[in-house]
Length: 79
Image 1: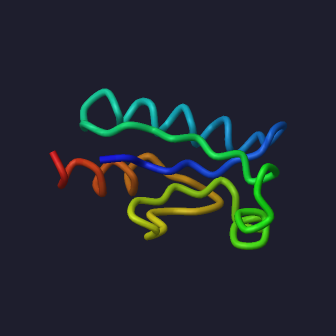
Image 2: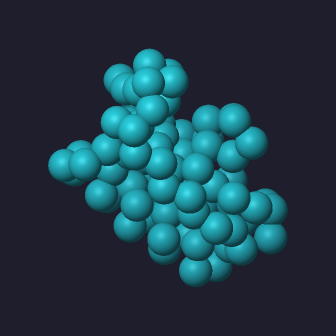
């Protein structure tokens, strides 16, 4: 499974979310594809006010304030 992580440089919330995602990744099996929304007008328009965004198969798992429990539960059910 590939998890898309939408972010941008100098985003404090994104850095925290990335750490939580990496912690969950230790127990669940998935790859993280980090996407800088500043490199795509489509991503900026879609996610610009929502980052950080964690998505799987174009479905948003969580956006903005990312919490460990929510993403952990989501990815544990796929292992």
